[in-house]
Length: 147
Length: 147
DNA sequence: GAATTTTATTTCGAAAAGCTATATATTAGT
DNA sequence: ACTAATATATAGCTTTTCGAAATAAAATTC
Image 1 (cartoon, rainbow over the protein chains, first blue to last red):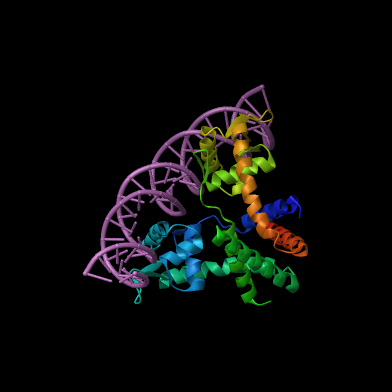
Image 2: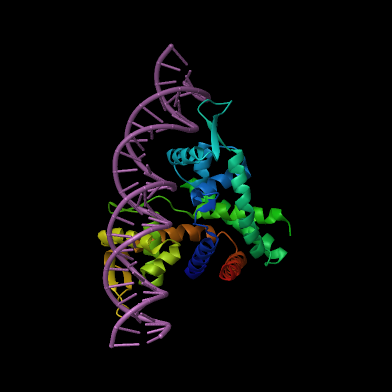
């Protein structure tokens, strides 16, 4: 295949990322939630309580980095840490009621915006898109694991 | 369409974005190039000389942020600033020879990695993928312009 | 042409993000 | 029981990022 297609794909995807990126902090009740914090809160919403290590892996940062970031969220009463009953080394991070409320109040806005756009594709396109994204992700993950 | 598909799509795409993220600094000749610096250097390579404002827009950061980042790249002799002949307010940022050499020595590695993965899709899948990414980007852009 | 408004970039201060090195406690393996 | 591996936390440092404010140039208005 030609080098141009990869470049074209890369540039297109970068553009889409830019479009989807919400870099501005959420402003909710005078509370400022950064993009990274948003990611963490969203992950806890969809995945349920996670370990520091799991969150770090998902965001592709060091566990020490994640510990610091969870500190700040804990300080804001949006998450809380508790020790795992199975392994005393492990800290489980979960949303507080406050954290959940904040995510809910904002998440529907993002989803609505994405849904408005996504639904302008045909159903076949939607399925194909999801399938391709997954497939490429799996390939990339496999490649990362080999390096 | 069902809400589940949007959620599924969103999660899949987030995962892909993370997979493509290169958060580790490049180490080239004892020089450490961060991810953001990498993005700037790559942009200057593909787009040619840019203004601070253009670079800031591409990375979706404030011009003040970009100015600081260009400072560091200039300090490392990878880029240089010069005043636009058309508008004395505007600074044009361009790669130095040194900057170009560094991008070339590294860029091929990234593209190779992405190409290795991308080429594991069929040609039809590749075309469809690019097409869908573009289409959704256009839709999102249109939506943003209306808001 | 002068005054005012807008635009592009820079500087500064503060906070967040992110890394490495190191430490501590717990669990797993021998 | 001892050693190795694992999960998280802490500290120090650099980079990123924002908003506020400043400066200079260009555009607009009168």
